[in-house]
Length: 520
Ligand SMILES: [Zn+2]
Image 1: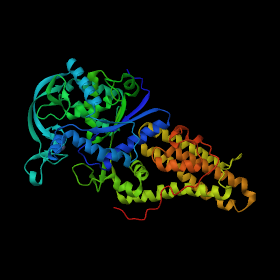
Image 2: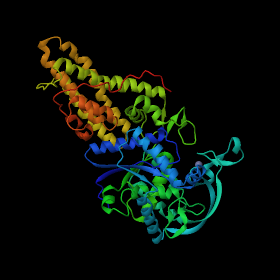
Image 3: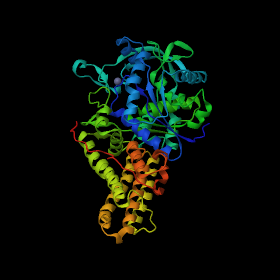
Image 4: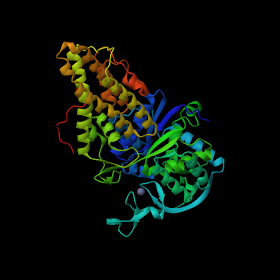
């Protein structure tokens, strides 16, 4: 049913009640880097993000704030979530809200389809419900409360007691999909990645799946169950459907067949929803499962997971106001192995900014361009003969282009950047060894001087193209200074090393200016 021609990538949709922190921005940046990379590979890349706006918790906070839940969501989308995307320079192709008509109508179509096909039944449910998680908890998910909740069982994530709920609900026969899911994980080992996430999901499904309660009747802020409007759809069931309703499911078949299936980037805390419940829903509906579900790690600050319920949350603008959005993007993509937990610290950010971005990359660009201005009057030399040292740089350009492309293929963004940085380091070493400033002193060395500057310029062009998905603003400035034609973000990344240079350079302001203020 799908032609698989696109690279369709999604982030989890933001729960509107959350306060944006660097964890949200981290997921967005990772998905955005991948989307930009695939766009620059000539693919039809499509990045979806959005907001999750239904559920009891949103109804409660809206009521407490004296507004309707829709007004509450509207306010948060405009004041918190869309600004977050701008803060870290996300180039998303679409932004879906679960209150969009296109979502509500087509989510209902999906539900009706499952109901008609016999995958949904009426049942009774009693269990411990965490309003924070919007999820029924198993006894094993609960821990001993502390402080005011001592003696009670509380949610391990929110540290608040769960509510014992007894409801007549509609249930999705998820239990019947266990074997099909295990076969899927077996046949397609890349379906859930990284390996640690895959193993966790497989052992969870092997324990046997329960049916899933998919409706609530105790409140009405949600999508109405199409055959029984006294029930609203369980918020997770509703939210997961955003990935297909935004892609055209139920209303634009051509678009849907072009985009679907998607690559889902999610935090590992919501892996089960995406790697178990979601593919089971799709199997039931006869829709192709996602291409991949990739569970990234947690950001740790002072050894603790960043989360909505803990006060360690850092607003992304606290970082970007000082260092800029490029540095935010570079730091989190470079310093943390994508898929593993990683620690954030102001000291590490500051050190990498200075040594890698300002000194390693920015200074290299400024020096080379300044020398072309000084020694060649701004004209980029055209050279006939290159030395072995020049050819070695050429070899590095090709090698790192290929290595980075390969790494992105398995979502190893950190490996791609590390590969590209070999070119930064080699170019710095090359300039030091070739000493163009010494060559410039003797007109007899003119041909050699020009070969060195031409080689360095070409290396910078390759870097601009390769780093464009990660640091889009700095590379756009660099590209202009190098005299590159068109936009750097339109250059083919898999052929980055083929760039041969523009006619003239133009002045370049510092790509990563020195930061004087102490932060943190
Ligand atoms: Zn909870």
